[in-house]
Length: 353
Image (cartoon, rainbow, N blue to C red; front, top):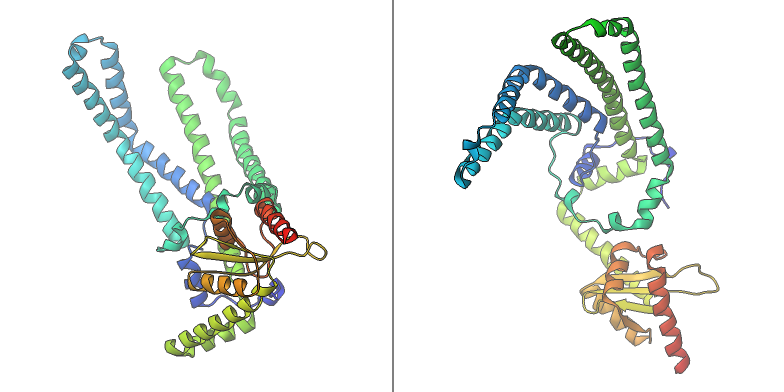
């Protein structure tokens, strides 16, 4: 039986944190990363502003000059556009480099420098539309939406109070020259962006602190888990391997003991076997009583043949059950129809006999 959240009172140990890191489970704050990235891009724009204006002015002047000799031949045209692409890449390189450095640095600051190949593993659960819909309408999604609305209100309030104090100043724009108008508008935009960055930075810091707290809470342990971990740490690796091997053998033996009670065994046919039991009078859905691959797969089929349990070859269904269904649990909702067809086939075969 799972321990309740109230019983998890102990801080996670270093080993627990290490295991979480290996699985790619680390604290992460998207708000903090976004705020730092925006501030870095704003700083890069201030530093590169004169250079960008000079480059843009040159490009516009050259584009309006209508010098057709630059595009007279295919070679000249290719050379012209290649030069323009190189120029655009060079002018954008500082922005892209700044974004890369600060985004990566912020992630390292929040989560630390980790290497977790397990996080790159392909997860079929992400393709399940039912689970995706449940995530969209879950309480966590509602809280996330509410927080997004509150952030939008905060940012809008900052912009409103800044521009409200500039209303009388904006009224004088009707007498300003074009050059003066552009300068004043750029200052207003700069003021708005700076205040937005500060507001987003405050939100990012709060979110980062909360995400780290939430991550620590999710890894808290019970007193028994701490004791078990200390005992495992003091046990020699050879002894631990023997214990795990013995536990695996006992679990496999118990699992094979339940195979004769199965209604059907669905196979891959040689690599995966899943034994299901279904009683329409007492069960709402089929339950997995045993599953295994390779050697265990052969054992399951051997026991099934000995006790007359039907063995049905359905490779895709067998693989899906093996990957998503746990022993002693009901099969996933997405596989109900496919398994029901197999059970109906088994019942028809039994009636013919």
